[in-house]
Image 1 (cartoon, helix red, strand yellow):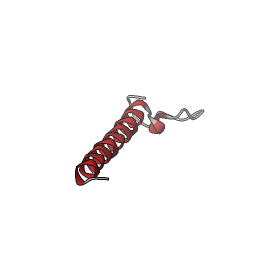
Image 2 (image 1 turned 60 degrees about the vertical axis):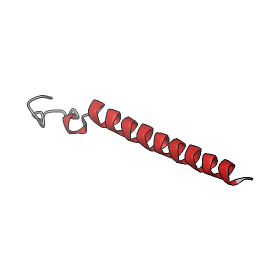
Image 3 (image 1 turned 45 degrees about the vertical axis):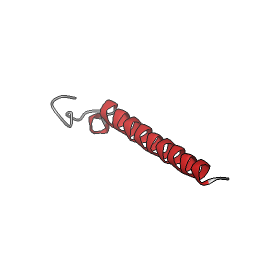
Length: 52
């Protein structure tokens, strides 16, 4: 493998790793914004927050 090939492979691997990292963080953010565990329904109790 030549030096140019190794450099390209390293750059591609770094970009792919950054893309996976960003995609995972975007997924975690989306899940966090779409869920409201503090608003779980409990029989006979008032809501945890007024928005629930």
